[in-house]
Image (cartoon, rainbow, N blue to C red):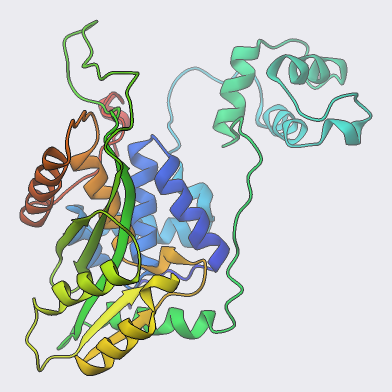
Amino acid sequence: MVLRVELSDEEGNRLRRLMKKTRDVVVLRRAMVVLQGAQGYTPPRIAELMDLHVDYVREIVKAFHAGGFDSLNPKWGGGRPRTFTDDVRRELANLATSRPADLGLPFQEWSLSRLRREAIRRGVVEDISTSWLAVILDEAALTYQQAKTWKESKDPRFAEKKRRVERLTRKRHNPPVVVSVDEMGPISLAPTKGRGWHPAGEPHRVPATYHRTGGTRFWYGAYHVHGDRLFGLLLEKKGGRPWLRFLKYVRKRFPADQRVYVIQDNLSAHTTPGVRAWARANAVSLVPTATNASWMNPIECRFTELRSLAFDGSDYRDWREVHRAIRRAVAYRNAHKVRVRRNPGLPLWRRH
């Protein structure tokens, strides 16, 4: 029986945001496994792409089925018994997620000191430091953040488009040519922080101040889904004409008599009359993801790999350096199994 992952649009967008924001390598790896499962990949294929054991991939998928997003967060054991019981921790978390104004308090949002005073006043705890309170909230997967807006897919053909993408990515016997495409960027000539091994007290440093004098570029990326090959072009602008030029570049990599299925989002520049006419004349089928559901696109995980390889810890001074770095990163990624490591400073026993 093939383990499958079914995600709603809201869950897919949440998973994509988690992949971009998390600094925990374990959470990132598990999220990439789940997202690729939702994109139609089987556990053996995911294990091959990410250089993981297939049993570990199956465990992640089963855990996600059973526990949802909570299963993506590692739960470390060991150590002395907790000072605060699970019930107390739940009460603190519930208080933190409540609205102070609804409790009759004269402010709209919690700070750690306000939350600490209110928890003591209500008798939830006799005493607690703000540091321990922060630890408890972190363990409850609560973070201090600004309110943000988000887009939900209202596409009436959401389920139909999702099924079509899954059929193309899951077909293993005599698979068609399926290419996932998108733009990565804008990219600017700006220092990018990263992590690595350096002598204690002597970290690698990149400038904190810089001038954006080089403009921006976009990396037009293509991922051959069944061939597991990444390729693309670094272009100056984003629009219908550059996109058509890029699609022609992609089409030349495959035999003219072979139909190519191109998975792409619904950006208007991707579906101009010129693009559609060219696609009909050149045996290219445009396969759109649902509106505001770019997480369906398999290239999203590949962009995560590429950013890690080419940009973490970089300070490029001109576009020739950027182009060379991307080209070498793509070649390395195609030749090796890439594991994205966001936090190599974790203890060895936590890297699972």
